[in-house]
Length: 178
Picture (cartoon, rainbow, N blue to C red):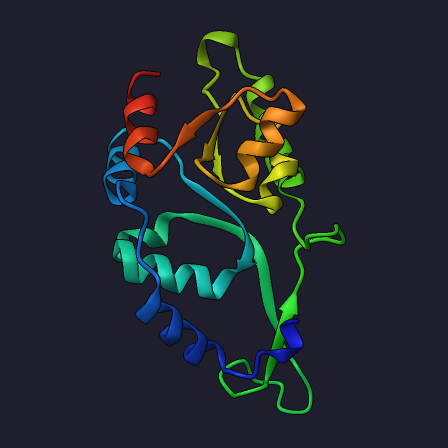
């Protein structure tokens, strides 16, 4: 499927900027997180340069502080230039079926938290919606699953506790109370 994409990375970002809107409440959540020194990390099956460009476009320059763990892009012969049409391909984050097993990305954070004194341990939160989020569902203290999406169905079937969210407004409300 990825090889069917022929746009350059800048063209891809331009198309996405014209067609994607930020989930309601995310900007307020991110502002609150920054003000309270709560790190925000994006785990995605997307591609780092595209996600970073979209975050900067949708959130503003302060989005540069958001850590992004995702797939990347790599030059593709014969052009070998992601800024050219058909000059790039995806470089998967790992060898898992989704190209990015998000549970593997969460574990180092969970391990670091587990080594902290109990009174200093932060709550690990995760918000997701789809199939690529399923591996991460069991790895956090509080899972938010987007209403009407696959992660809700999976979590119910597997008996994984979660809170349903429609947008980031409810995530912010819950997070403020922790």
